[in-house]
Image (cartoon, rainbow, N blue to C red):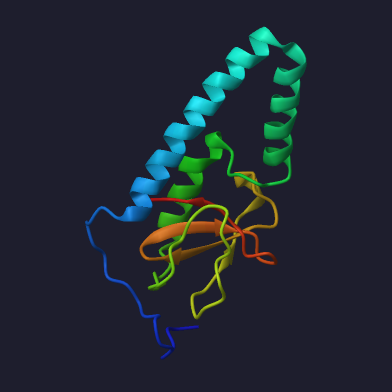
Length: 142
C-alpha cells in the first residue's frame, strides 16, 4: 500500500536534524539507568524489594512489553535490511503512548527479536515498535 492523500501524513525524506523525540529518548534512557542503579542498591538493602523489582522487569520482558536489550541492535539491522518506506506522523511518537491509526504500513516483528505479537512501522524516519491491537508504543529507535 502506498501513501494516501490524507491530511497530516506524507512520505518523509531523510534528514539529519536532532529531534525532540531523540532528546526525550535520551532522557528516558538516563532515567532508566538511574532507576536500575537505585534498584540494585535497594536489592542490597532489602532483598524482598529487590526480588519484587526484578520480577516486574522480568515480567515486562517476558510479555513483550519492551524490546530486550540484546535484541535491539539486531532488530534495527533487520529493519534497515527490509528498507521499508517512512511516513510523516504529526503527533509525538513516545514510548507508552498509542500510535493512532494512519496510512503508514505496519509489519510483524519476527519472533527471534524477543517481542512476540508486536509490529513495527517507520514514521518520521524512526522505527517504532508497538502492539498491533492496543497500538501502545514499546520502543522507538532514533
